Length: 236
Ligand code: SAH
Image (cartoon, rainbow, N blue to C red):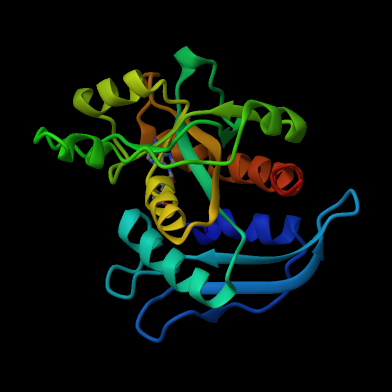
C-alpha cells in the first residue's frame, strides 16, 4: 500500500512489477499493479500487488493521508486476498533517536496514531489504536533495515502536542498512512508491517517540507533498494 506515485515507481521497478495499473473501483483514484509469481531473490517467489492511492480527482495531488489509505486497503484486499499487507513509503524521522535521511525502518512495535486525542475513558486507547505488526528486531536485522516505532497522523507538521505522543511511543518514523492500513489489516485478520524511508528529520531546524522535497528521490531509492529483502524476511 503506497501513498505517492513518486514512492511507488522505484518500488515497482525494484520488485520487477511490469503489470499495468488498473482501477480498483470506478469512483476512487486507487490504482492496483497486481502480478503473480514475482521472484524477489534468494529463491523466494510470491504474488505481489502494489496499490497506489492515486491522484485526488478534485485537488490534483496524490491522495495521501488516512482515509484513502483505509479505503484503498479494504478494496485492494477484497480483490487480492493477501496474506501480508505492507504500508510502504516515506516518513519523518528523529535525529535524537539516531534517525538519518534515507534510513529505512521496519515497524517492530505496534503502530499508533499520534494525533487522535480522546480523553473519554475507553475512547482514549481507541484513539491511539496500537495496531499489531509482524515486524520484529530479528526480521529487521535479517533484512538489513532498522527496527522502529511508526506513528501516524494526518499532518506533515509536528506540533508539541503530537510530539509528546510520539515521544512517549518512542517514535522512529512518523507518517500519514501506516496506522490506517494497520487498522484494516487487523480488522481483516491479515498480517501487517510498515516499511518507511526517512525523508526529513522533524527535530532539526530546516522546515520539514523543504527537507521532504529535497530528499524524496534519495529516500524512495533507499526504500526500493531494501524492499525485496524486507519482503523476503517478512515472508520467511
Ligand atoms: N508536499 C508533498 C506531499 C507529501 S506529504 C508533495 O507535494 O509531494 C508526505 C507524505 O510522505 C505522506 O504520504 C507521509 O506518509 C510521508 N511523510 C514524509 N515525511 C513525513 C512527515 N514528516 N510527517 C508526516 N508524513 C510524512
